[in-house]
Image (cartoon, rainbow, N blue to C red; front, side, top):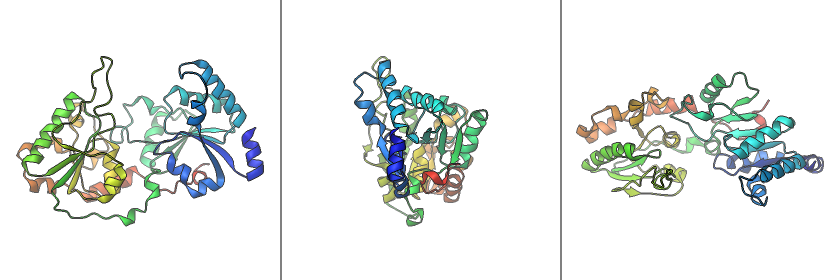
Length: 329
C-alpha cells in the first residue's frame, strides 16, 4: 500500500483532496503539511481515460484507492457520484475516512429543507456548534463524526485586524444569491429606492447569475441590469471595507461580510413569501418587511445593528485553527 510505504519512510500519511475554496486552507496549513502529503484527486480522475458516465472510470478509481489507501479523502460535498464512490470505498476500508468540509450556510443557516441534510461521509467538519446540532438532528442514527471545526477560510485570518468603520462614501454593495425572474424584480425595487436616495450601487452577482440555463436553454437566473457589476475575489473586496453598508439575503455572503466587520442589512423576500424563518432573521430585521419605498437615508443607516450582527456570527461560526488532527477523536 502506497500510504503505508510513505508513512514508513516520511512519517506522513496521504490525503487525497478535491480543490475548493473551503478545502485549500486545510491543504496549505503548515501544521497539516508536516503531518500529511496532499495530493489533488481531480488529477487522478482527469487521467482515467473514460467519460464520467462510464462505470469503468469509477472502477479504475476504486482500484487506485485500494492501491493508495489514503488516510483521508477530503472534499466539500457528498452528493455527486464521485463522492458517493469515496463513501462506498471508505465503508469497506475502515482505516481510511471520507472527510467533508462545510462550504455554505444552506438557507440562512437552516438545513431542514435541503436534500443533503443527510450526511454521506465519515467525518463532517462544520462551521460551528450551531451546525453540529442541526446535522445531528437528522443523522442521529448514522455512524458519522460531526465536528465543531470552524470556517476554514475564516480560520486563516486574525479578525482583530479588522474594524467597523464609519463611512460617508455613499457606496452600497449588494450580495444576493442567484436570482430568478421573480426574485430579481424584488431586488430591482430596492435598487430603485437606493438610487433615488443617491446611493452609489454596485452588485457582485452570484456565480450562477446570467450563466445557468434550464432544460429549455433559457437563463434560470437572468443578468442583473442597470447597476455597476463588480467581479473578483469576494474576500478581498470585503476586507477593503469601503461601503456604507452591504445588503444580502440568506446567502453565506452575509456572514462573510460580518466576519470582515462590514455593516450589513438583511433583505430576504423569500423569508416572507415561502414562510420560512432563517437563523439570520432571528438576529437581523428583514428590510423586505418594511415599506422601503418611502424610507429615507437615515432609516437605512439606523437599520444596521452591529451588536446583533456579532451575536449572529458568534452563534453560527467557531474560530478554529484548521489543524485536522486537533479536532478528530
